[in-house]
Length: 194
Image (cartoon, rainbow, N blue to C red; front, side, top):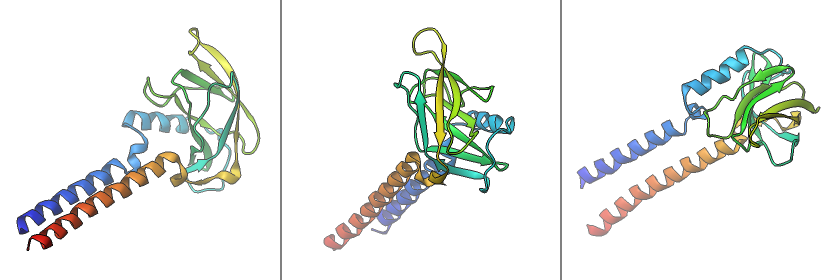
């Protein structure tokens, strides 16, 4: 019986450790190349609006207008404050965007091809419309489309408000419940057999 308990306990420790690794903050970037691209975009740009926030990651509500109306962005989005300036990791509803132009600067995607296009761009203004251009390849030949982005200062919150972060917490809680249930089941069965 003691050996069974040790086996169950070892398995629980392995599952919890695996869950902690899988759902840690480092999984925001699927690999180091993407993280390097994000850091490069931020380091090479100082046009983000100044923020009275500590450097770090936050969530922010963003609206998109323009184009054909078929494309969209994920909102809330990840806002990154670096050196007191604000940037946003913008995720499109399509993988067909190959670059964006913000304030005359060209930005390339920070993620791998085949996934919905993601860009890290500066937030030029809060609570005011900002004109951007996104180049799409959806209609065969690439062409630039004008969009308007609007970021809401009063919506800035913790990174935990992002849907991806909430999903991680749900999976983590489910993992704990499953492991706890397995351990409880072991003890109940052990007691019933005695």
